[in-house]
Image 1: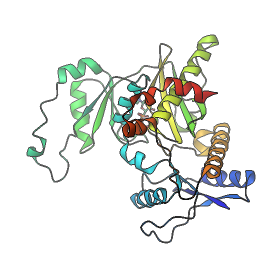
Image 2: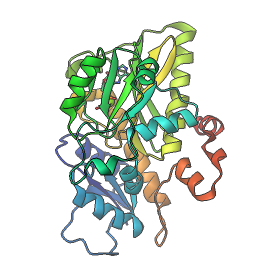
Image 3: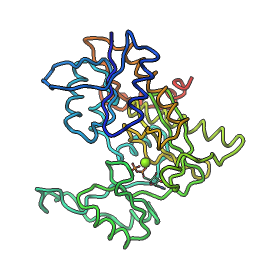
Image 4: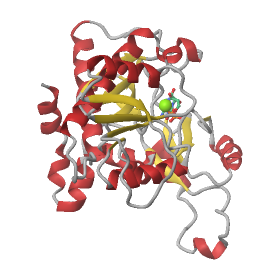
Amino acid sequence: MKKIGILFGRENTFPWAFIERVNQKEGKDIVAEPVSIEKVEQADPTEYAVIIDRISQDVPFYRAYLKNAALCGTAVINNPFWWSADEKFFNNCLALKVGVPVPNTVLLPSYERPDDTTEESFRNLKMMDWNYIFKYIGFPAYMKPHSGGGWKSVYKVESPDDLWVKHAETEQLVMMLQEEIVFDDYFRCYCIGQKYVHIMPYEPRNPHHLRYDSQLKATGPAAKKLLDTVHDYVMRLNLALGYDFNTVEFAVRDGVPIAIDFCNPAPDAELTSVGQANFDWVVEAAANMAIEKAKAHKAGQMNLTWGTFTQAGVTGDMSVMGGVAKAKKAKK
Ligand SMILES: Nc1ncnc2c1ncn2[C@@H]1O[C@H](COP(=O)(O)OP(=O)(O)O)[C@@H](O)[C@H]1O
Ligand SMILES: [Mg+2]
């Protein structure tokens, strides 16, 4: 018998529905249950073939537990090593390398110096070239943490003066300054197992509970082309990043989907926020993916997923990140 575990925090609906669905579909040779931990000993394997991680971004103890689990053969979703290394500014850099449009973006040094650093720690940093930056980004702009989520510390800034005031509030956070995309359509897309894609029209300007109550505004052939492009971009990003459970957000300007937020390795999947139809989709796709991973799991092997970026890092061959050809193939 193989076990699929799910590690989670304050979520109330998704984990239980996921467990129930896996056990309905399998339940004998493969069973799902909440992960249970009573000791964590170095190089000691867990009892799980697969663990779905929904919480280690908030609990460093779990992240360390999962790295050991992965080394001992558990297929941990998402890859805890890659997740620890990843952040949003790098995501944008990688998106451009795999041919996915992103808003013009720069990285800003934190307003306050990190603890235990002095002026001398910043000898390499010159005065930012603000003239260039303001021309490249324009106003209004968005300023947001290079690593984070949940709309925390996301600012709309109207002018250089507004930027100075708001940047001063961000303390030690490293922020990105980003061109505003004024959009016609907006999507949030689940991507599961690097092949199951669900595109949800989303209206970020609505109150939280109504954000998924949105309709596609493009019509006719333009709508089909747009959805095909979104699907292609979702695949390119997730193949490059190597996430098996992620969401990608796009703002659509002049018919072009521009990726806004695609580092969400524990994306919201609560029934109360995503609604019944999206919830049913994500439960089904996650159950199928976890069952496939459990079936493919081999004892004595590493069972982690790595993206094409990390594969390129090992072989030196950047062409594996090509995205386009691979994404097309995976779509079938
Ligand atoms: N460049 C941008 N142009 C337009 N809207 C943006 C931009 N960046 C962020 N937003 C808005 O702010 C929201 C939160 O930003 P996002 O990058 O998704 O951060 P988080 O990871 O905290 O969700 C987005 O859903 C979108 O509505
Ligand atoms: Mg977001």
